Amino acid sequence: MRVELRQQPYDPWAELSAHERAHAVPGRSGAAAVFTGSMRDRNEGVTVTGMFLEHYPEMTERHLRGLAQEAMSRWQLDDLLLLHRVGEVLPGQTIVLVAVWSAHRAAAFEACRFLLEDLKHKTPFWKRETLEDGERWVEYNTPG
Amino acid sequence: MRVELRQQPYDPWAELSAHERAHAVPGRSGAAAVFTGSMRDRNEGVTVTGMFLEHYPEMTERHLRGLAQEAMSRWQLDDLLLLHRVGEVLPGQTIVLVAVWSAHRAAAFEACRFLLEDLKHKTPFWKRETLEDGERWVEYNTPG
Amino acid sequence: MSIKVRFFASIRDLTGRAGDEIEARPGLVARDVWRLSTDGLEPPPTLLVSVNLEFADLDAPVGEGDEVAFMPPVTGG
Amino acid sequence: MSIKVRFFASIRDLTGRAGDEIEARPGLVARDVWRLSTDGLEPPPTLLVSVNLEFADLDAPVGEGDEVAFMPPVTGG
Image 1 (cartoon, rainbow over the protein chains, first blue to last red):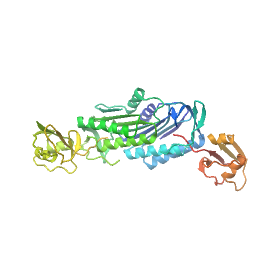
Image 2: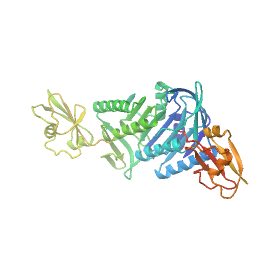
Image 3: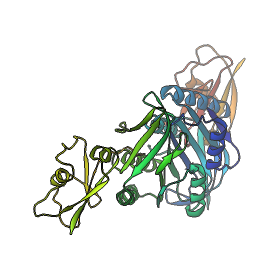
Image 4: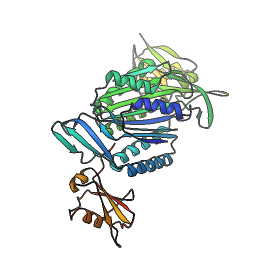
């Protein structure tokens, strides 16, 4: 199980490949469910040229560790990887990567979605978008 | 949109990386949902040393093309990648890779799950497992 | 013209053959094709049927040039 | 000992400051901390509150050494 906040851009597929090489037991997990969320260059009909992802370092890290533990035990997962950008992000870059490994698909799908909904609605992150004519805080996330 | 049957082992993360390099429009898709299903070395309490994946070539390919088209239009996806092994498979190898790209997460999650449930319950594939003392057909897939 | 018959996976093991070719006759349905190609074997309750690469049922009409396949529940993914 | 106060994101813009430090007194709740650190600004209806890194509500008791934070709805993921 690994949870990390990243200041720098990352390649989600390279991260998954490296994580599996380091941690996967071949033949053990029948299922992996993965979600990547990337920065779009438009939001609510407006061109967005950049974003700053603010967080509350001590609380965000504590919350994510608890969240990962909860998912691991609730769905008896084999493994979990959660990466989330903080700081300056550009369009096209990956913001979040959530991956879970389990014996069967239902647990993998459900745990992946559970983690993402928590990230969207309960984890202390805030997005400030840079527009062509200024900045704005994203006020709320859409329901899942 | 790409659908392929594969005779040879493949690395799902390398496939995703190559597919995005070739097809993704940076900043367009906010969400990607991915599922990989791998061969486990145990099933129903018994050690499994190998598997043969039979299919009905003309019908399987036709069914998969129709399925992919249906998902693309039903969830207005940006893109879709579906790879499925056929023939001899060994424990730890990836059998299926399903990936969908869309503007928002709900469509990505739902389409990915829809595709996988169809693969499990409606697409002509049959698994014959090699056990330590013989062979057996997998008789049915578990509900999702 | 005739009807092409195919058997897949455990159904092939059950019938002991990969396929058959039978003479088309007016009024045939898939159930008749099964009966004619299997020496009167009882169709398994979970049997799947396709006609020309689309799932169908045992009452589906079949005729000259059609391809009819019989298979067990699918187990891919 | 005192109470550490932190403001995040649009709440920091609203209050015009990143944090504060106020004197602990018996019987304080998070709402009092907000009032004391914001010159009586009305708390926004969607305001989130944490006490010692756990979400809480405006009626949560706070005391010496506690860290109280005020923030808008989260927008990560």
